[in-house]
Each structure stands twice: as structure tokens, then as C-alpha cells.
Length: 101
Image (cartoon, rainbow, N blue to C red; front, side, top):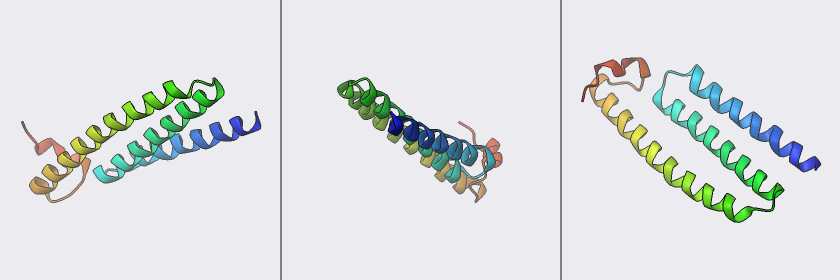
């Protein structure tokens, strides 16, 4: 039971680090990295909960689904980064208002 508490402290630390990276930065790259950190924390939480309830098969299925969704989100974010860099020359999120269609 002691390892369970340590796992959740680590998961909450990862969530707060990821949220800080997403909120404190104006760079698209840093925000994608923060999103990845939060996503990895969510995956660790699912694995930890699955291990606690002895339902690892369901946890593994959810993790595989999350990985597929995560790849799509990162690909879309990187495409947005490339488009923003071509138009404005920077990765600043506040300069995305010039992107249309």
C-alpha cells in the first residue's frame, strides 16, 4: 500500500509539471511537451489503478487507445507548428490569429 501512495505522488507531480509547462509558455512546442507529460501521467494513473484492482488487461487496452489518440494529437500540433512557422516565422501561440482555413 505504501507504493501506491508513492505512485500517486509521482503522478500528481507529473500532472502539475505538465500543466505548468502548458500554462506558463507561449511556445507551441513547449505546450505540446506539457501535454505529453500530462498524458504520460494519465497513463501511469491508469496502470496504477489497474494494478490495484487486478484488472491489467483493461488498463493495457486503454493505454494502447490513449497512445493512438496521442499520436494523432501530436501530429496535428506539429502540423499547426509548421504552418505557424511558415506564416509568422515563430512558434508563438499568440501569433496564430493570422492562420485561416
